[in-house]
Length: 105
Image 1 (spheres, one colour):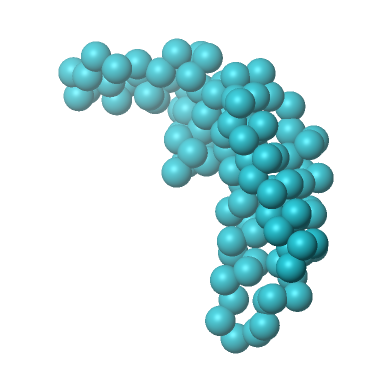
Image 2 (image 1 turned 120 degrees about the vertical axis):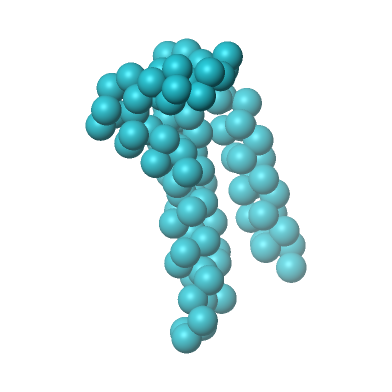
C-alpha cells in the first residue's frame, strides 16, 4: 500500500492533491508526511520480503527463520531515518528479542 501511494505520487506529481480536491477532503499529506511514508516503506519492506519467503506452502522454511531474522537486523541497521527513528528502534528491539529467544531455546 505504501509503495502504491509513493509510486502514484512519483508518477503523477501532485496526484494526491488532485484526489483531495476532487473528494473535497481537508486532509493533505505534507512533504514531511510523504518522506515519513517513504521511510516506513524502507523499514517495512524487509518484513514484507521475509513474510513472502517464509510463508511458502510447498517447501520447508523453518531453516530460513534465523538467517532471515539476522538479515532483517542487518537491513534495518542500513536504513537511514529522520522521521521514523522510534519505529526503527522498536523494530530493532523486537528483532534483538527474537534472536535472544532463539539462542535461549
